[in-house]
Image (cartoon, rainbow, N blue to C red):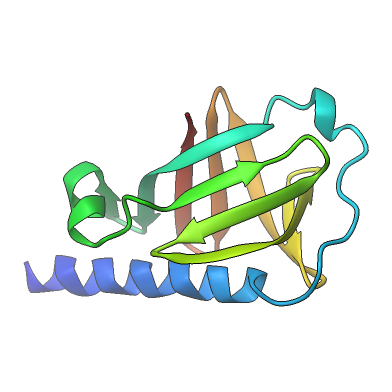
Length: 127
C-alpha cells in the first residue's frame, strides 16, 4: 500500500508540474481549424497512469483530483484545472496544448483526450 500511495503522490506532483508549466505566459492564436475539430468541448479527468499504476474513480476523489478538468474552445484557446489550480492561458491544435511557448502532446480518441508527459498519462473524458 505504501508503494501505491507514493506512486499516487508522484503522479499528483507530475500533474501539478504540468499545470505550473501551462500557467505562465499569455495566449497565442490556436489552430485555424479548431471550430471543426472533434476535440472541442469540456472534459473531466478520467484516469492518471504512470508505469504500472492507474488512478481513477474513487482514488481520484480521495486524492482531490476529481474536480480536475480541461476545456478546448473552438477559437483555439484552452483552460485547465488540476487539483484546484487553474490556467486560461493555453492554446491547442495539431495534437499539442501550448502555453508560453512550451507544448505538451495530446491524443484524442473517441471522446477521450490523453496528455502524455514522459511515462505519465492523464486522460480526460468529454462531458
